[in-house]
Image: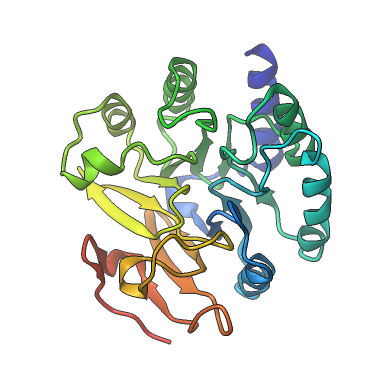
Length: 277
């Protein structure tokens, strides 16, 4: 844990900009799962389209490699480097169950991503916390403890974002309940946005003014069909202005999609309300 805290401090120091909430003025992109079962060409297309939007940084929600095999894990990571090296955009990773499944894969993940599975960083006056539930649906006691200490240390920053791979929040929030420890903790510290992946489907729910998003696929095989139901390839472009966050969802262009986009706030539990090309 001491090593974890040290790594987080070093990473945060590298990206911190002394600012107040009113000084926030930046954009970032959120990528969904690349795997399991990556569809050839989609992830590369998503990166091209993301780069064209010129975000200040990119962050994903996990499942970068197919993984689950210690013998091939390192080679899988190595094969993806040429994609990222084309673009000079800082890239932050969230660990998924396809990224970490064993002690060996954890070491490879840390070496390839250059940070521990759980960490945090500041950008302008915004705060980002990345957690690790690659080993199971829920957050462990250690992860909840890390989150509480991290949020307490950054209570004056705004807005606050939390990322982890497996969306255990889906069922309670879909039933309009905030009666679970994670929600109560982030509500206490003013977190505004939670992002997960894993399901390969775009979902946006709100509970107590906290926005919960399951990012859609950025290359992983779709498990269902229908744009209005969230089954499409794409990425999310977020613009932070002061304490305001506006998110635009971009569907992949042809041949992987129709290139549609919509304001995430117009998406409800029944799907898209408004879309535009």
